[in-house]
Image 1 (cartoon, rainbow over the protein chains, first blue to last red):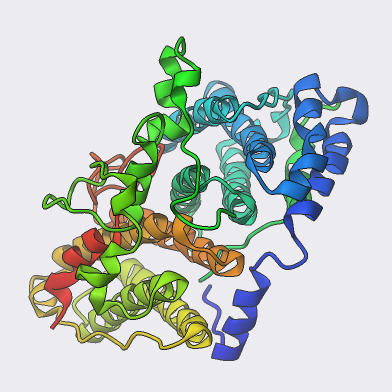
Image 2 (tube, rainbow over the protein chains, first blue to last red):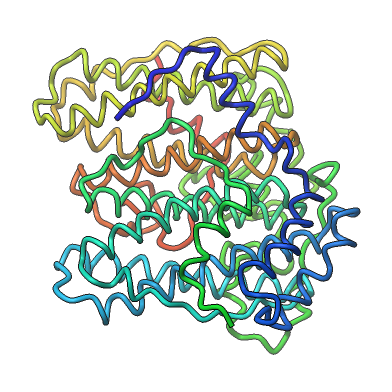
Length: 224
Length: 247
C-alpha cells in the first residue's frame, strides 16, 4: 500500500511529474488531433471545433486562448462526472445511504464546476465545449461497479487537472483550476474510502497527459 | 506564463452585464471576477494586512501585494520567489511529518485503521520533505527543520489528535492552493500540484475519520470544507495558524 522510495528516486519522480515533453504547443496539437479521435471527426461539435481551431494561435502565444482550450478540456471531464452521478443516482439499484449521501454531494460539486467552467470560458471570450453524449450503462450494474468507475473518474480528474494546470497563463484561471482540483482530490479519497481502498495510494499524484485522459474517458462517450 | 504577479489582466465581468448567474463562475465564484478580482486571489497568495486570519477573501489593492510579505511576517521563511515558496512548503511538510512521527511514537492511537492511515500519511509527508528539500537545494538555501511542540495535542488523547491532524491537512491543502498560482517555474508548479492533491486526499480522509462533517462551513473543518471550490490561504494566514505547534 505504501511505496518506499529513496531520495534519488523521489527526485527522479519529481522530475517525471514535470511537464517535460508536454509543452504547451504539443498539448494543443494533441488536443486538436485527439478531439477528432475521441468524438469521431464528424461528431466534433461546432463549438469544440471552434475551440480547438484556435490552437495554432494559442500554441505560439501562450495566452488566454490556451486557457480556453484547457478549460474546455476540463469542462468535458466535468460534464462526464456530473452526468455520471446524476444518472447513477437514478439508475443504480440498491445504493446504500452512505453512497447516496456522498454521491449527491459530489454531483452537486461537479455541476457547480460545469457552470463555473462555462462562465469562465465565456468571460475569456471563448465558446464552451458542448456536452457529449454519454453511455455509462456498463457501470450501473451494481453499487460496486458504480463506485469503481467513480473511483476511476475522480482519480482521472485529479491527474488531468494536475497535468493541464501548468499550461495555464492567466493567474486567476490557475487559481480556479487549483481550487477545483483540490475538491476532485477530496472526492477521490472519499470514494476510495467507501470502496475500502487506500484514499491516498501515492505520495505524489500523477499528472496525466491529455492523450491518456482521453483514452480513459473514451469508453463512456457515444460516437456520433 | 505571466512575467510577474503584477502583470495578469483582470477579467472584466462587466462584459457580461446581463448575466445574473455569472456569480457562479470560477472567477466570481472564487471572488475573482470583476473589479478587485486580482486583489482577492493575490491577497490569498501573498501578504495581507487583515488581522482576522479567518478571512481569506478580504481585498487588498493589487499594488500592495508583491512580496511585501517577504519583509514582514514571512521573514522566517528564507529566500524569495519560488525558493521561498518551496521553503514554505518544506516547513509545513517538516511539521506534518514530525507530527505523524510523534503521534505514532506516542502509541496513543489504538484504532488500527487510523494508526495505519497516520503511518502511511506520515511516510508520504516525509517523501514530500525529501523532494522539496532537494528542490530547495537546487534553487539556493533550504529552510531548516522547525522545532515543534505537540505536547498539548498528544496529551489530550486520540480524538484531539485526529481532529488536529484533520485541521493541519486542511491547512496544508489551503497553503499549497494559495501558492500555486504564484509559482513561476512550470516544473515546480507541477510538483506542487502533485503534492497539493495528496494533501487534499489526506484531509478528506482524516476529517471523515475524525467524525467531522462532509461539508464544512468554509473554515478548516470538514472533508469538503468549502463545498465545490476550495479556498486558498496566504502564507501569513498559515504561518500564524501553525504558531501553536512551534517550540
